[in-house]
Every structure is written in C-alpha cells, then in structure tokens.
Length: 195
Image (cartoon, rainbow, N blue to C red; front, side, top):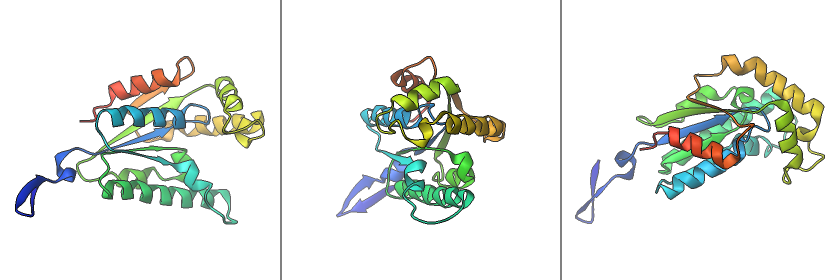
C-alpha cells in the first residue's frame, strides 16, 4: 500500500513483503536454539529484519508457584503475544523456538502469524545419546543443569516420542545427529521460501 508523507509517496513496509514465522520444535539437545540463531544470521544477511523468540526464556522468567501445566500454559501465552508483537512492530521474520507441545501453544502461535504471512514448522530430531553429549558439552547449561541429567533428559525424549505424531503438520524435518549446526541451518534455510 502506498501512503503519502510530506507530499511524497512511500511504500508501506508491511504490505511490501510477505512476513514469515518459523517455529522450530524438537526434543532437548536437538539444536533448536543454535539453529534458530544461525537461521537468523542467514536471514539478516538476506536483508530481512529478524527477531528471535525463545519459549524457554519466557517460561523461566516466571516467578510464581504454579504447577507444571500452568507454568507452560502461561509461558506459551506470553510467547505467542511476543511473536505477534514483533510482527506488529514491522519485523519481516520471527524465528520462534521451544517446546510448544508442552505449552499447548501451537494454536496461538499459528494465530500470531499476520494475515498473508507464512508459517513454517521445522522439526529437529536427535537421538538421546547425541542429545546427552550435546547438553553436557554446552557451557551455557553447565554440568549440573537438569537437562544434563540422563534420567531427566531420557524422560523428556520419551515424552516427545509420544507426542510427535500429534504435532501439527511439519514442513521440514531434520535429524541433526550427523550434521553440524551450520549444515542444519544451511539445509533449512535453503528449503524455506522467504520471499
């Protein structure tokens, strides 16, 4: 849509480009956060404005004594609002990542995609042993992190295996176990039609 400002016409940024939401899901240790960051860099170098929205960051920003279901429900609601807010601010691409299946927020996340926008659901997979090696060697998690404990990590992978068939349609699925994060990001970015 063309608008007038001070007597001159300019192209409305919102109407000039298709906006995209990439939702990256997968079990702990599959590479969601790392690949999201690498995808953001690739998109930015393609002249797209990009924002990252990490569901885990919002979840653990809570300071409330609530049960696990309510904890994730609240985080999912806030996360979807953040994604929508980035689009309302004019961002071309939002890369959301996290355990959407735990928060039950897929529906609200889909709804955050602007009219005429495109939603891309990316599923990253890694077997338990590969995920355990990754989380244990991640300096940001630390050796004492809950996700680095084999029993906890195994239980989350089992839960994910139970819900994988009930996830919304997946557009891109990648087993990340034999690939570097850069290779995964290159593969996913090549499959996305971001124009």
